[in-house]
Length: 310
Image (cartoon, rainbow, N blue to C red; front, side, top):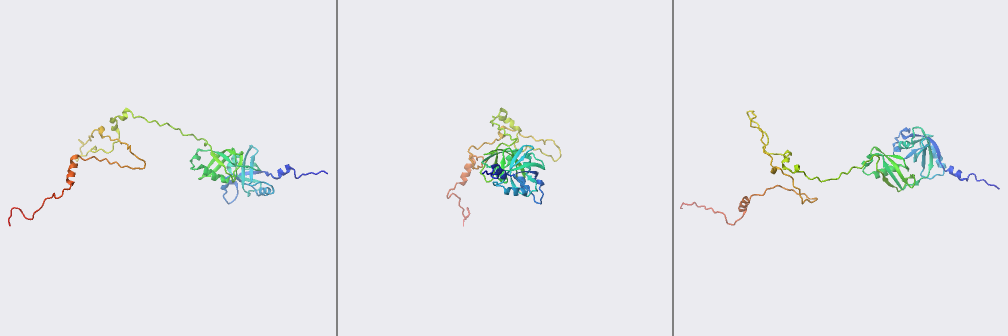
């Protein structure tokens, strides 16, 4: 007459579909094994024990597997994915930057819970150092680094490795939620000004007019005019120094040659200007007279000598 549906209670179904346990966490450098696992430090995924995989496979959870990590002592939390299930029982291995966000030390307790996150559509990052501006294409570098991440949490400081250098970026904003999944998503990325960055001061360019002292040709005497003939000192064969002091000619304003700008300059055209003086008119007329051709204007020669009779 009365029926009890104990196993169909919604609360019991909620507990069956939820994974929640505590582990002692260590950094990846503490992971024993012959292989180098530095790849774990370059992303946002953790390594869990095989018993976690066995328990997750029995639950009706959604894929990809995403987890919420909570440090109850400091009330700090973040989100991550899972890379492998090869850790020792009761232990999980986290990237170093993730342990810093959770304020965890080696061997500290962390609560691991399975969660479902919305797909990301927008995220904003703030580099923690102005050195990040030295990267030629920061968006491409960040996009390549985020392939090793499964999710993002607002307020976290993630670390990416590029060109053998670690750059830290704070997640300033994520949409549509404070924690989002970035697996197979189309996400718009924006950057905030780096921490400690200062805008360069722009100084106005004022064209200064030449003063009277600069326009006076007498002030050019101290300028380096290059080579000047007969300005050196001489040496005598008898070794005396009398009368060998140089006596340079005074510098006149006509000796100062200043550059004349080429106002007819055109971009992409090279003009070779030669300083050639025109010849005097007298020499030009003589050259023209010599070079002018006149027909039958030569002198004849005779085989017979003058003044002798045959």
